[in-house]
Length: 456
Image 1 (cartoon, helix red, strand yellow):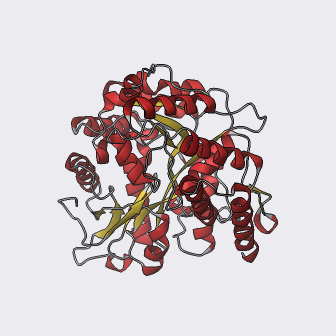
Image 2 (cartoon, helix red, strand yellow):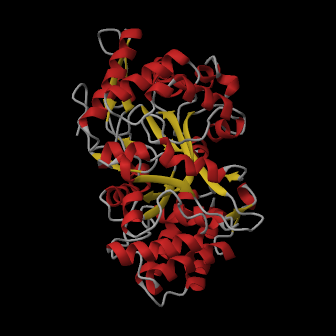
Image 3 (tube, rainbow, N blue to C red):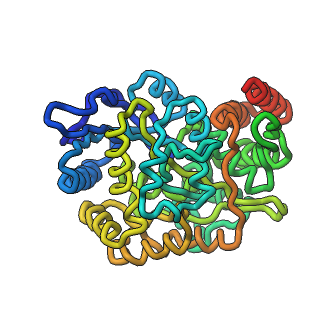
């Protein structure tokens, strides 16, 4: 589905917690009417029309405030399997989104526009969380992106399947043993997969890493040239043994073992999966792209073990601009990013205007997230839009309550997507081959990724 206003004819592609597509190039910059033209990532292909309507309403509002800028929305979905080719081919929008983990690599490759002047001029520049902003900076401190959102991995569960299985949806599991017990009950009582994990397009590695972190594991040690890959750690082995038990002993993972971010969301919204882990911010996508009934949705904190290193893994997305953008386009791009994504977190009028449009179009308002500034700023923005919040807060409160006092760690920073891809293969083997040798698979994956790291 394309935005009816100014959709650009291009082919859609995949995704993760941020979407992507291609579009016109920066060369289209300044048309004869004197306006600056920018193409911007809008929504994931297939999103319901009401969401496109809400997006277009914001574009119209922006253009009224900035009559010298012409914004062209482009459907967009980020996918590890297609993003590199799109970027190299120059087919992405002028303004697009990437995972926080990819910022430093793309900066080093010269594939993003330097936005230092524009970002430092923003009135709230000094309020950014330094550790989040650092994902968009080079070693000299130059800025190549603007943080858009941050999240932590959570346990998403289907309240309806819990009830059908005789479980209490207001008492979600808090340990991995309880997840296994509940998954088995759901599978036996409903015939649906009690628990599932993403397995392909690098998402299998992403979620395996999150589960290993929850058990105290880390996939890398050191930095830069001294990085040592440690994905064969005991926590990763424990994570894979857990999946093996659910798959082959309990038979509680259904029969489809090829899910990525989009397809597992589809299956969950369709009532085919009892529990899975993913970013805490996916409620918006589940309702907007997958027609999830909010009444069946529950979000809890991912279980962590008693390991002193056990933590929750976080992530997020950056707004970035094509390296081909002109100075005028960079100015316009940062104005758009400020208007659409960031000012609503620090300005009451912007927050209320955004929330009202979303609520009027029956889009999600109040999805659980982490702060890109600080917790007080996030809490203040939520107070401003309290009258418009429609995400069932009582059904997602277990996420915040369970994470209180926990340590948040970031994703691996070196060869992240390559590491995740290597783990995809391991997870798929464990779920499709009862005799899969976990130690051997991890040893091979570790060796392969270390070679990539050493090669630079």
